[in-house]
Length: 321
Image 1 (tube, rainbow, N blue to C red):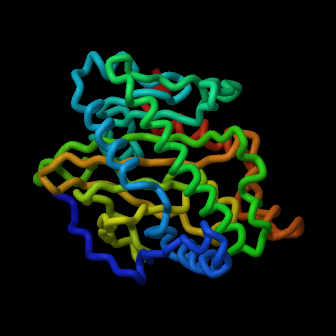
Image 2: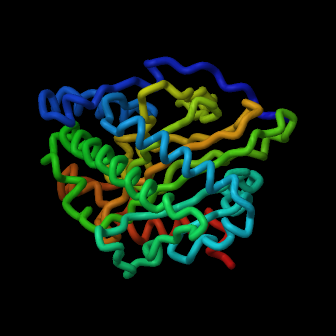
């Protein structure tokens, strides 16, 4: 049985929010109010006015395609490390036990200081792996990371203001973040493939916030409140951001981390540029920080680092090897 057809989306489902007044300081509270309302809905938001130059996006895509179109030996030279850096081949990730392994391939890198050093005190942090056959990729990838991470910081300030918190609330322990970027490549999917095969299977994102730059192919679908799938098509000039599990947990479910999937019915390959924003590993995720010490959380407090270790262990085959 093939996948069910997803319905079209609307601005009521996934709004478009211009964050320029947040970035330039002209109306941060107005943007924060809009971000707050959207995060209490599906938790997916199209963001315009994000400030990432189109030239940076185009060059990142070009480098990503060069990498994914390379021969397997070139990609295997930077196979994923225990620190979750490098190439993850097709079948290397599985989001749920009741679906097949994902069709996607990924190339993952993370925060790197100006001198190229990186703290390695956490299992999901270590040296990035860069393909020797493609020396330009490192410069372009780190440049994209810097721009996308800046967008995430603006958004985290907006979420804090929307919750009537100091604007640096979510960024107080983010000087050595666990944030990761990835190029994610999807092959064209056989229209007749069964309903357990996906580009990426239904899942919620693991960390605090995801900043996604789609290409023009489409294929991303989001589960609405009724359990039906809706299309989240690319909108030129926007990024698509979504609340992830740790932000939902931090806000005790007030902000929603919503299941989504990719079914690439286009007949063409698909590419996404993804930033997963996460603060330092020791960051405490406790909704009592937001709602007060007398609040009774639905879930126990955890740290960003501990939660991600648990989720990565469930999702990625290499961690069980």
